[in-house]
Structures are given as structure tokens and as C-alpha cells.
Length: 453
Ligand code: MV4
Image 1 (spheres, rainbow, N blue to C red):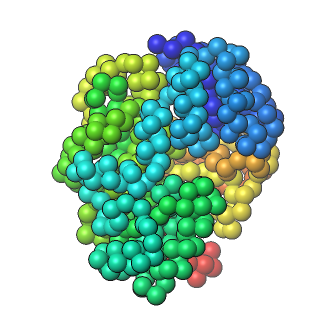
Image 2 (image 1 turned 45 degrees about the vertical axis):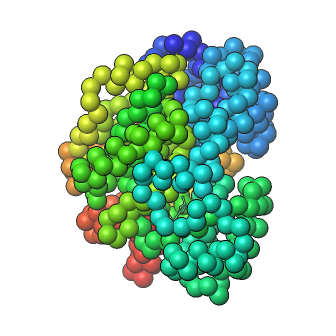
């Protein structure tokens, strides 16, 4: 097992990794920017090294700075958390070249999964359902028009190197295609230095459902059920839950069995998420693989009782999945996560600043993953996630009720947060009925506006 791990991240996830390391008896090294000097991940790690100024490009994203800190502190491994360098194949390669274990999949697999068109082909080969669309990348507008004709409009153009909705265009009719293709290519070229595009049949009002995977270095793969992540605004998830209200045990088993085979075939190791879209008929189609631990991993931890971050570390250290998961994976009850952001709950503008008063809820079935403390300062340079409230109970309705009572007891003074928004969403009849898709938030906000609240 590793003796010392460097955590190449900040905020709640850096603290989450510190927790896992402490429980495994591993020493931790925090890295921090000048803006995060007083952060809790710095306080609770055994060592801490300042790696640069506030701007991420010069600190958390600066590979030489992170590697220097790892070499100075003589760590065995680096945990990248999510975001920042977590899916950077080049960074994973530099770690390995420096004799430091990167806690994640192999660099070649990170790279392959990062090219969405490649991941799509690999998953299809392994028998995972994909949406009708292009076989390879789009070569010309003429070829795209032929494909779209075969697939049927509407279609969606996606950047092979894309993410977070950038470089995506929905095409409703042939006349629009050439222009939209050129726009998307230009956007993708500028954002990802790769203009490659592929095409899929466009699904209206899909549900976003993702499966949690753990895979060791010996070809063993386990699926830890799924998460429903349809409550999103502008590609930022707000609420996630497990299990999905629409996934039946039969679907879970069918997709799970195919995924085990698929992930083994692509040589996937460590933790990962496989994203699907569900159409109105309830069919699931693969869209992409996230080669990292995700923000919403706690809902899966709550229903399975499996510590995903500890599992990541133990897998990276060469342990077998059968030694990490000593019982068959089962899902118990229902868990809901509310992402509490430092932002105005109505306008969604960021609300950084000093938290002058704080009460964290507790009690049965309540978990709070946060880096906030009384009098801490939320800097303006990074994402606005301040806390995750995760409530677990026997049923979805009980988990909603528990979340509502915990949100009532969650007090954050000095900044605006999304707490009031969560209180309204959880009370919404459509949400309560499990009647959710990726268009939910837009409809909900329109409804709220019309009602003047
Ligand atoms: C789609 C889609 C409809 N049809 N693909 C958005 C981000 C990227 N990860 C995939 N996305 C979508 N892909 C097809 N073929 C609709 C979306 C989409 C979406 C997906 C998940 C969650 C929220 C979303 C919001 C808008 C669009």
C-alpha cells in the first residue's frame, strides 16, 4: 500500500480524499494556490505545499508545479480528484514517467475515452447500445447530409474531444446542417484544438443516467448501480440520486453485464462512470465515459455502502476487487444529493465571499461533504460548489423528506447559496413523482417566473 499520496485538487473533493487516506493510514500532501492558503484540505493534510497563484492555469492546472510538489514531498501516488488534471492523459503519463502512481485509468485509456467517437465505437463493439449516427468522424458537409438523411432529423453534432455541451449543435433540417457543422467545428477547434465532429440521432427530453464502475488490474469489473442526474442547468448538475426512479432491476442487470464486458475489453481500470441517455420509451443509449471520480459519487456510496475513493486508492495500489468488495454489491434504499453552490438562487450569478455564519445539518441518514467552516472565504476563482448534502433513507419519498428537513437546518450566512432553490425543486410535484428529464430545470424556472416566486 502507498505510504504517502499527493492530492492534486482543492475544495470538498480534496478533503474527501484526505478522509479516505486517513482511514487507510496513508499520509497526505495537499497542494494549494495562494487563494486557498486557509482551506480545510490544507489544514487536515499532513503536509501542504503552495503551488502558485490563484489562477488555476498557474496552480492546480500547472503540471510542472504539481509534479515538483510530488517529487519534493516524495509521494508514492497522486489522486487527481475531479476536474483540473483528472482526465489529462498527458499528466497521467508524466506521473508514471516520474515513478508516481496516477490514481485513475492508464493514460492510453484516458486518452481513448476522451475521444468520444472512439469511446462510442469501442462500446458498440462490446455490445452496448448506442444511438444511430456516424461510424467515424464527419469528413465533409456532403457526407454529413447523407448520414443525417439515413439517421433521420433531428440529429446532433458533437465534438469528439468535447465536453460540457461545448461544440454541440442540434440540426433540425438539412438546410441548416452545413452552417451548424462549420460553427461547431470552429468552436471545437478553438476550445479543444481538435475540430473533429461526429453525429448522433437527437433525443428530445432525455434522462441522464450514469453507471458507476470499479475495475481492478486483473480484469475484474463491478457495477455499483446507476445515478439519475437529469436535474441540470446549463450542463451543471444540481441534484443527483440513486437509484434512478426509471431503471428497473432487469435493466440494471442487462446494462451492468454488458458494461462489465465492455470495460474489460477497453482495458479500463480504477473508478469510472458510463453515461447514458434514456429516451421517452425508457431505452438506454451510451453517450460517454468519464474517466474519474465524480462530484455525485456519494449517492452511490450511500446506497451501496462502498467507499469509492478508498476503492480507487486500493485498486491503484494493485489490490484485487475481490479483496476490496468482500460482499456482493447491493443497493439499499435511496440517496439524493443537493449541490449547494455559492450563487444567487434566482439569477445564478456567483456569490463568493466570507461565510459569516454556518450550521451544518446532521442526524440519521444525513451526510455533508463540504470544505466550508465558519468565517471561511469562498474565493471567486474556482467553481462555486461549497457543499454537497446527501440524504439516505429507505425510499425515494423518505429521502426527499429527509433532504427537506436537512435543508431547513442548513444555514449559510454572508453569501447567497442554492439552498432555497433546492427547497423549491424538492417540493415540486413533477420532481416528487420522479417525472424528470434534462428539460426539467428550464420548465421549473419558467413556472417559478410565471408564479412570481
Ligand atoms: C445528447 C442529447 C440528445 N441527444 N445527445 C449534453 C452534454 C453531453 N454530455 C451530452 N449532451 C446531450 N447529448 C443526443 N444524441 C442531449 C444532451 C443534453 C444533455 C445531456 C445530459 C444532461 C443534460 C443535457 C442538457 C442538454 C443537452
